[in-house]
Structures are given as structure tokens and as C-alpha cells.
Image 1 (cartoon, rainbow over the protein chains, first blue to last red):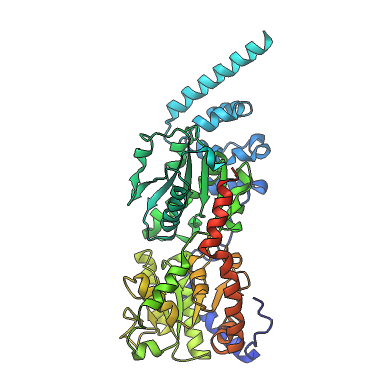
Image 2 (cartoon, rainbow over the protein chains, first blue to last red):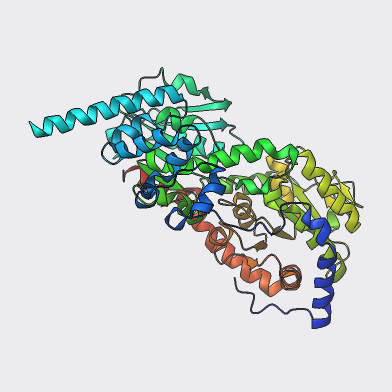
Length: 136
Length: 364
């Protein structure tokens, strides 16, 4: 409901209120990071810097895949924390053609890196077989 | 179409029938069983069947409904299942609210939970969000936009409960006009700002105003900071609503539903300075008790409130105080707000919610 019809305090009282709150600045600041007022970034206009701060990644490998396929952003962040850049890139390459399988297998956080590598090998092999089959 | 399935099971990280999400799961279970479906509640923790039991259950012609509100292993565990996965997204508190040593666990759980949003969005076949605010968080990752449906809750029962009990025996404490806020006493709910509001209100509006906070403290760190600020402002904290008439801030313990209803009836205004609400159940409860609301314009609060309350910006204290004064003293405004609240609560009632839920079930 609009505040238009609310009678405000006189200017002197308003200033008094502001002064009181300002005097509490130190006490208020203790409650949370001062001025940390950012909103959760939308994947559509997310920056590399945002990504790093979101995931706390030091070695985030940023490729065109992240921006052109924003649906992959989250899983990639999760995976990138645990696997090498090389393996991540192989995953992304497979993801272009085998999204369904990746959905089924790779977002299981319980998978170990070794299991992930085995899955990637399997999927790459299947991909090669499909291509050979196509040519025949 | 839900008619094509024999079972729809619900999954939660933790389950308690008394909290808002657990309560909704129970209502949904009742509804689903009423439709002739098998419906069980599985949870990693709490008073439900253990999550492991899901994997030994016959899941033929089943669908799953995951209540997503915090990090858990559930998305990773259900991702490989070849079953329709429905997600009820309740929002996750941003981790940056929790920054003290004692809040690290919560910070981690919220941080990981928010990092799971993309994954959950992608594995979901359909998403049901409590609010448009929540939907906007998960929509970038899901195939189809989330359907918005307010949290299912039987608010009417709570109001009827109040009428079954006589008001608390009269005491000087209850004669003091009270501002009320209901919710866990936590950094994101910003009860510290309610202390400041009370202190200003006692000075500029009415000396005998008091604040009732219903909810437990989230962390010992926050408790200490809260008490320090109260002491700095000269506000005395008490725990007994009926007898401690000298306390400016009353934080009653172990509030049963019947007590809660009486407190809603007793209060003069509901005030919220919360900076993150995925929906805001207590706002709606206040509406069902015709209790005028003054709230900080943040997260899902404006859409839950609609026209049924006054919204203010956090750092505009003179306006906030003027709005509070009007809510407390302007009977015409209180009547206008009551009419608006009665109108708004129709859309948030359990009957309305169940109709939406049934429509949604038949849409996927």
C-alpha cells in the first residue's frame, strides 16, 4: 500500500531520527558485512569475476561454453572445483552432443574424480562409435 | 498428467511436520493420497522415512517431488533415476548473511545449496516456486519457467484455534501495546533493526510500546550481538509475556500454536525488517488475524504482501517511523488495511492453494 497519505514527522524530528540511527552505526555494523549488498547474479549476465567469487575458484577455466550454454554453468562450477581443467574441457566437449547422458551420470555429487574419468572415457568411446556408425 | 502415475513421493533434506515446509509436505501428501496415489515422505533427517528407503521402494510409474530449501545429497542421488522429477523451490538464504565463526555451518550449507540451484534447475522436469522471487532464481537453469504457487498452509485453523481459548488472564504486561515479529532470530531476518525501530518508536510514538519476538536464536554470536545492542539502546529483554511487564522486548519460549494465535490477537502491528524471505508465512498469518503489517521492501515480501500492508525502505528511518505511527494510531488506515488484508488472504488461503496444486499436478 502506498505511503503517500502518511503524515511524516516535521523536518527537525526527521533529522533527529537520522542522527540517532547514525550514532548506532558501529553497533549495527557488527551484525553483518557492512555494505555487502549484492544480489545473486543472474546467469545471463554473469561475469568471470562473479563466477570466481561465487564458486571460490582460483583456477576456473573460462571458455566460450560457459557463456553460450548457460544451462551448464552450475554443474561446471561444481565440477571445476574437483577435477582438472583438461577433464572439464573433455566433459564440455561431450556435453555438446550427449547432454542426456551427462544429466544422468555426471551431476551425481557422490562420484569420485576417478569414476568421472571412467565415465568420460566411456562417453568419448560411445561418441566415436556413433561417428563411425554415421560414416558407414 | 498425474493420472498416469501410481505414486508421487516427496523428498526433503530434513522433515518436521511443525515447520512450514514440513507442514506443506504433509498437506501435499494428504492431497496426493486423496487422488488415489501412493505418497510417502522421505528425508535425510527428521521424522520421516529415511532417504535410503526410497531406493528400495517400488518406483514403477512413480514421480518424485523434491522440496529444495538447503544443500543436500538429494539432487545428486535422484539425478540418475529415470523418473519425472518435480521440484518445489523454497529459496535458500544467501550465505553472506552468516559471517561469524558460529555460523560457518549455516554459511556452508547455504553456499553449497545456492550452488546446487543450477543443477536442480536442470534435472527438474517441472518447478513449483513459492514466489516469483524464488522462481527468478531457478528459471535461468530450468527447461520451463517455474509455476508460482504460495506455500500451502492452513491459516484458517490457526485463527480458529485462537477462539477456542480464553484470552490470557489480564496482566499489566498484556496491556502494553506490542509490535510483533515471528521468525528465527537470525542475521537475515534483521531483528537488530527491530530493536532500533522499537527504541525510536518509544521515543517518538509511544513510551510503553514493546516488541514481541517469537522464534529461537539462530546462533550464540547473534544472540550476544543482539543483547549488546539492546543494552546499548536501554531496552530490557524478558521471556515471560504475561508477568514481565517491565520488559521492552519479550522473547517467549516454547510457544504452542494456541499461544501463537493469542499473541497474534494481542499484538498491535506486525513489523518486519527482514532482508530475505522466500515467501514469508508469518506475514500471511498476520493477515489472517487482521494484524496490520509494516515491512521492509525486500526479496519476496512485496509480492506476498501485495496491497495488504505498508512497505518501507530500510534506510529511510523517518518514513518507517511515520508509517509505524500511522499504523498504530490512524484508525482509518487500520480499517483500510484490514479490508486489503481480507482481500489478499483469499488468494493465499489453503483452498486456493490446493486448487492451484491440483492444476499443476495435471499440467505436467
